Length: 470
Ligand code: NAD
Ligand code: UGA
Image 1 (cartoon, rainbow, N blue to C red):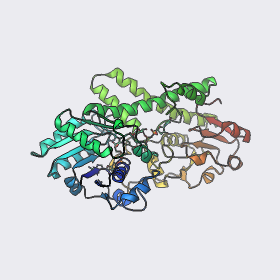
Image 2: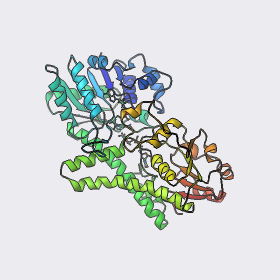
Image 3: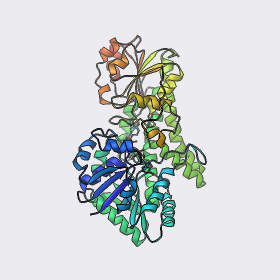
Image 4: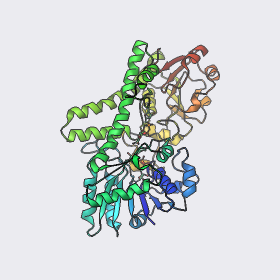
C-alpha cells in the first residue's frame, strides 16, 4: 500500500488530500499539522474550513484511508510520498520584507523530513513557492541525511476557495514538474499514477521543476491582472457613462479573451494573489529585471486604488463625512462560499471608513465576530504567520464596530450599506424592507455588482455600483 503524508492541514492540504483519499481507496493518506486545534477540528463534526462538498468527502474517508494527526514525525517517516502544503506568507521583516516569500515554515518542514526519514521518499512542493525553491530544498534534504534518496517534485495547486472540491474533482490540469533525470522521471510517473485515478492523462502536464514552480506564480499573476484590468476600466466607465458589465460581456465574447474572470469588484482578495505577485516582483528584481517587476507591481497598485476609490466614493457621496454614521457592511469574506477573510478587501474598506469615524455593523454568514475583530486589529501581512493561526491570538475590541448575525439587523437605522461579498442572499434581500428600516437618504454602495440598480433606485435608494453609470 502506497502511503502519502501531507504536512499542513490548511485550505489546500485538507481538501486536496481528502479528494486523493476518496479517489484512491488503496492509498493511505495522513494529513499532519503542528496546530493541534486545526487537527482536532478536522477530526470533529465542525471542520476547520467551510467548503461546499468537503464534509461529505471527509466523512466518507476519515478513519478508513484518511487520517488527521499531530504526530508529524511518525507519519512522515512512514510515507512514500510527502506533500508539503505549509503556508508561504510574505516576509514581514528583513531582506525582502513586504515582498519576498517567507520560507521559514517550508524550511523547517524540510529539515524535519531529513531528520526523521529512514527510507527513500518523493517530496512534493504543494505550497506556492518562488521559482528555484526546489534547489534549496534539495540541498537541505541531501545534506542532512546520507544514503537516503529524496526526489523533489513541484505539484502546485490551482484550486480556488469556495469551489475547491469541484476544482479538485475536475481540474483544468494537474501540473507536475521534476528533474529531467531517470529518478526525476520515475517520481513524476509515480505521482501521475495517483492523479490518474480520476484525472484524464491528457490533463496531467509534466514539465521541468522550474517551469512548474514559475507556472503557478504566472497563473495567479495573469488571473489577478485580468481583475485589475477590468477594475481599471470600471473607473473609466464611471467617468464616461459606459457600463462595465456591458464592456466585460462585449470583450469576453472574443474567444481570444474569453468570458471568465472579468467581474469588476471592489478589489481582489484572498491569501494568494497579492502575496504571489509580490513574490514574483521580488524574483524579477533579484534577477535584474526592474521593468518586468514594475509591470506586475501595477496589478497590486490598481487593486489598492480600487479599494481606496470605493471608500472615497462612500465618504464623498454621504456629504463628505461618515463620522458617527452607521454603515452596514454586508459580507466580510474575500468571496462567497468561504469563511476565509485573508486579505479580503472588506478589511481595507472597513479600516478606511473607521478612519473617517464611521460606526460599522458587519454581517457575514460564515465569519465570526472574533475573526472580524482580529482582522481589523491586525497589521498588513501579519495574518498568515502561525501565531495568528491559533485561536488564542489576541483580538481588539472596537467600540466603532459591531458584528451581527442577520443582514436586516446590520441594516437597521443605517445611513448606508456597503456590499463587500457577493453572497447569494444579498441578491435576494427584501430591499423595500431594507429601505424602510434605514435613515434617509438611504445609500447603497455595491462593491460586487449584485443588486438590481434600476429596481433599487425605483424604491428610493441612492445607489453606487462599481463601473455603472451614476
Ligand atoms: P494554511 O495557512 O491554511 O495552511 C497551512 C498549514 O501549515 C497551517 O495549518 C500551519 O499550521 C501548517 N504548518 C506550518 N508549518 C508547519 C510545519 N513545519 N509542520 C506542520 N505543519 C505546519 O495555508 P493554505 O491556504 O492551505 O496554503 C498553503 C500553500 O498553498 C500556500 O503556499 C499557498 O500559497 C498555496 N495555495 C493556497 C491556495 C488557497 O486557495 N488557499 C490555493 C493554491 C495554493
Ligand atoms: C485563486 C485562483 O483562482 C486559484 O486558481 C489559485 O489556486 C488560488 O488563487 C491560490 O493560489 O490561492 P482564490 O483566491 O481562492 O483562487 O479565489 P478566486 O476565485 O480566484 O478569487 C480571488 C479574488 O478575486 C476574490 O476576492 C474574488 O472576489 C476576486 N474576483 C474574482 C474578482 O474581483 N473578479 C473576478 O472576475 C474574479
